[in-house]
Length: 267
Image (cartoon, rainbow, N blue to C red; front, side, top):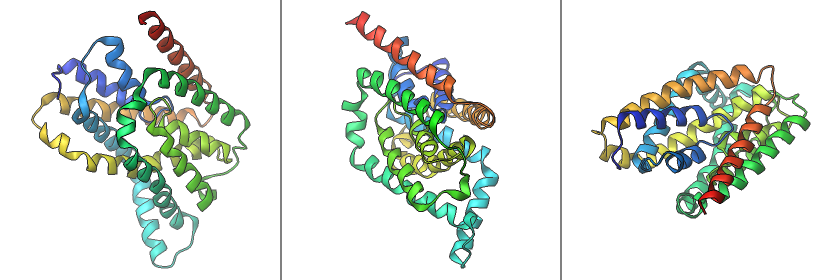
């Protein structure tokens, strides 16, 4: 793991926590942070640690929902067919396409797809897609209205987030809105989809974290990402109850413009 001081670990953790669940692409921010600051790339072990921090954040924030989903899944196994019993199984099935493509395209996602110019395009295009979905989506459906087909569509599109700049939350929220979900339902479903796939990726790469378990900067980063992740989750859930995603669209477009300008100047 590259040498990193505590301050840098805190900044990386805060950036990860704030951007993981907001539709602005955490991977793009973590890739661009060393570009703009000159700091060392944190490396895979630190990246895995930060994702464990944000996973802890979402589990803490949605702990009551997670318990309800677990009981619902058990209820479905014993014959219950209420929407709340079927929803956790729809989440599980919707996770499979993203996990599959993540496994087979892992190398490309960590190498050729990390080009800054690719991020300029994905930040811009997905910003436009989110704006369109937010403006035109029916926004009439709730979590219990998510069908197997809708769940699979959102889950499959989640795989596109392997490309930095797309944003896992951005693509799933956009898909949910286009399929008619109201804003809060789209956001909550996005969070529920994030839990198993983030946990799975963390488990697969846990060896990198174990090898660096004695590095203090890692645990500082985990704590910073968990705290800022809880804050970001609360802000997003509260915000979308009464407001649109337009500020996130504007932010994505501004970030793309700043990145493109920086690349041209440095060329």
